[in-house]
Length: 164
Image 1 (cartoon, rainbow, N blue to C red):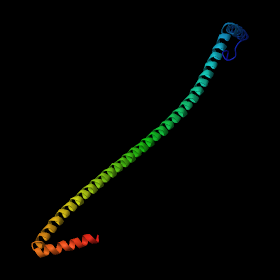
Image 2: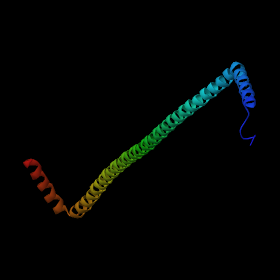
Image 3: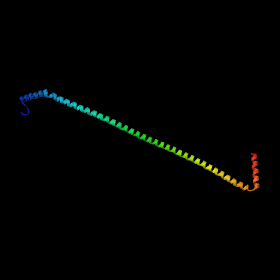
Image 4: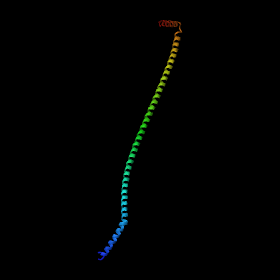
């Protein structure tokens, strides 16, 4: 039983040794230990704050990247729309130009046809006049073969001339 219940002397020397170790530790080791604990606490706090800041910055970067992506999508859509509008404009301008060219060609063709028609009509008039003169000449020769006919024609022409 002697081991379970300590003696007063043993208890006294244990207390003296504990106090001596406590004083030595308090004087030389307590401040560095407390300081190390405080530094560790500060480091942990700063680490937590840095992690929170990094988390916030990551969230901000994520928001900014989403905004940049949405802006890029809007700009892409705008460029596509502008490209389509430009394509439609070019096509409509080409169509208008083709229609204008076709109209010019049609007008030139109509003018050429009208000129050819006028030339053909003039040529037909000349041929009709020539044929009329030839027919009249043949009729007059046939009628004028006779002397009596010549005299009658002359008198009728003179009568008509006098009336005019």
